[in-house]
Image (tube, rainbow, N blue to C red):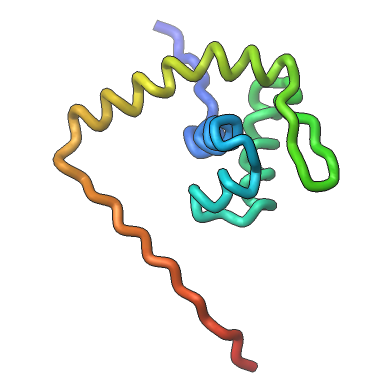
Length: 105
């Protein structure tokens, strides 16, 4: 059976969270990333699929028609993968710790 290339899961997750949250900043916060790191992950996915999924403006990202088509094609499978992993995993609790530190020179 020939091997099929799959996009990086982190890039796909960044895309999905951005679409679902409606904002890059919200998605970045959910993933614990800076907005620029989120943008790089999405750019990586765009390079992988060979299509622009978002148009970027000053402080916003708008889903393109290709992005909407990609989302509709991938979303049910992404959700199914998440359910399958949750169903096979032990009870997992995620604890996220946010630290605020002052830079010292």
